[in-house]
Amino acid sequence: MDELVVLKLGGGLITEKSELCTLKPGVINKLAKLISKLTGSGYRIILVHGAGSFGHLKAKKWNLHEGYIEGFKPDDNDEFSKQSEVVESVRNDMMLLNERVVNSLQSFGIQTKSFPPHEWATGVGRNFSGNISIFENNDEYIPVTFGDVVNCNDGTVFGILSGDDICYRIATEMGANHMIFAMGGAPGLMTKPPSMPDSKLIRIWSGDMEFDGEHVSNIDVTGGIYLKLDCAKLIALEVPNVWIVDGEQPTRILEAILSGDTIGTKIIT
Ligand code: IP8
Image 1 (cartoon, rainbow, N blue to C red):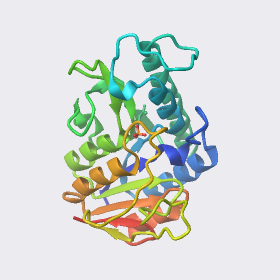
Image 2 (cartoon, rainbow, N blue to C red):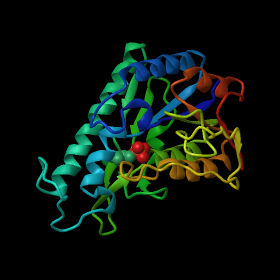
Image 3 (cartoon, rainbow, N blue to C red):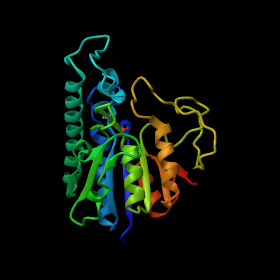
């Protein structure tokens, strides 16, 4: 068994998205246990996690996703006086979130090595620059990376690189067998926003099917479900088993990988 799994843990799954820097430790531990099962069964894993409330709230308030804006200040005051301070602060918050994720993995006996994108990636979107070979197969540890504030060479100075774009590059360039987007709050891609009572799970999504996604634009500075689907669609051109599943039900992640069938959304081309 030498199959490669790229697993993305959505920020809304591992953090309380609307409460600044608030973790969901119970969920993180359940997922860490699942990852230890997968490595125990011989799968190679590359783990990518989102930002949730450790990234999106401050980044949105200080417009970090639009890059450097001279003299920018939000309407209401907070502890920062300029964007560069917030860039540093969000990077630190993301390192903290990452530390909490890897601590949980280590408590299940898993060795990890973290690769913070602000140290190895430049630019945003799928075509960011960065040497993906740092994630090359390593038997001794699970490589872990995450969405981050990165430097940009196009005049914007900095920007937000989403974990979803990183997944696209890793899954396609490393020849993954499985790409699993584990998210919170829904069993997969839904026909309507998950909060609506007549919202139904889309079991198979081929890119041409209608859906009315809920993108919480006042919180999310990357692209929410739309970016995820864009990436998933392109990944499915090269990776055989691509899923969006409810990460709060880790057995579904396991089933998607072991049997190629579970409750969730399978992405096909
Ligand atoms: O949650 C966003 O990454 P994502 C990164 O994977 C920041 O889209 C810092 C908001």
